[in-house]
Amino acid sequence: MNWHFIWQLTGINQPKLSRLEKEGAPTPTVATLRKIASALDVSIADLIHKQ
Image (cartoon, rainbow, N blue to C red):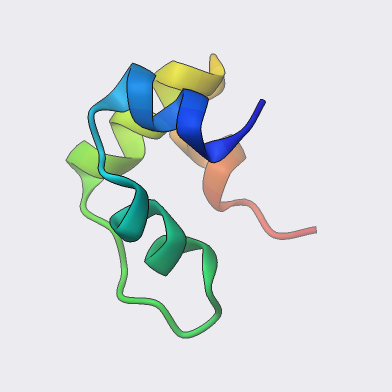
């Protein structure tokens, strides 16, 4: 799965997705996390859990 596909599923534009991917990026809103988690079919906790 690539960012373009996630952008299509979430409606979050590519520049915003790119910013979220970078270290030190602003904390995304719960709404943004919910959209991404839904597109990936995972929980928000799965998105933010660091390994």
